[in-house]
Image 1 (cartoon, rainbow over the protein chains, first blue to last red):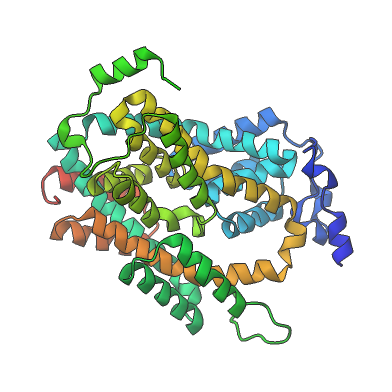
Image 2 (cartoon, chains in turn cyan, brown):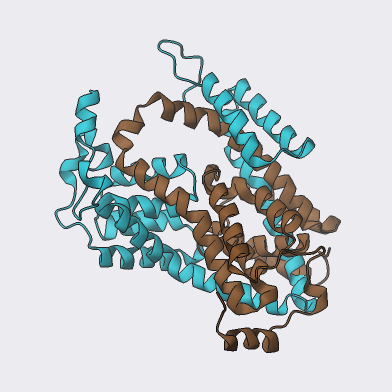
Length: 221
Length: 214
């Protein structure tokens, strides 16, 4: 099994991310057969990601990315896309940006990742820079400041909802709730900084959750 | 490295910051490349700690830009957070706005330079790791390290997100109607699928009318 999965790893990637489709990530289950015969060029990748970013100006970036990458342009099938979402959520970095990196890497390695990222960020980041320049120029005007006070109240509500949004999946795992509570107390009560916190609590939590053969004290995720 | 003089003078003439706009303590000036690199180094080091989609870093961003380097007041930080949430695109682009705030006293040229520098720094390490992860996913997927990482870091992320939520709420520092709106938005975010842009628009109007203030 180990040998079989090793074989799927592109050997050339360390030196030369050669163009052409990489073996698709879920290929162990035989999905790679459906990899499209016409993978996007770097230019198409850039334009596609630009289109995703543009379409998502009203929100729902990941849904748009699925619609364009899977349904419209048929670059990858749905299973490959969902694998990407899993990887993007697991690894550090903003999910949507990681997703663009996944799509780019899938076809063109590191170069593809950078091109996809540029396509994804170009317009939103330019717009944000313009907004930022406007903010720093005018935020002292009383009218602007009053409106911002209201917007900030709403944004604070959104920030507050982030924790509750994922709380449900840990409801049946008292150890997880204890870990979360300890983390909260460390940050709120003792002002522990993020980096030392993760470096200490992370390995401890990983040791507790290390998969053990036969022992399934964990609820299914 | 010096910026083109016309950019500097443009900044001085057209965008000179009034005194009230300066941060509450002595800010670290971003007027030479060494300082800029130091700032980028700070964000580079944080990049790999952006668990759970990047929002776990918000408290740390506040500590860096308000308490440590004094680029922004707490109020400005809250404003920029709201701006990044309201703008289209990934909300983690907030780092670009923080970089802009850091360079702003030196004029818009430096502001943009440090904005791009900061955003690049926060994205680069996580992007490189993501590329490696994608290429090695077949081997990683069934690795016990992957499973332990996912299960172990999840609850820690949960705790951090609650701390971050409280931190932002504290930073927003609005009056009682503002607090009620925050709590209401939190509930609506969890119970409905209404676009958060509506909440911000309505709350912005309430702010303009003077119902919410700080």
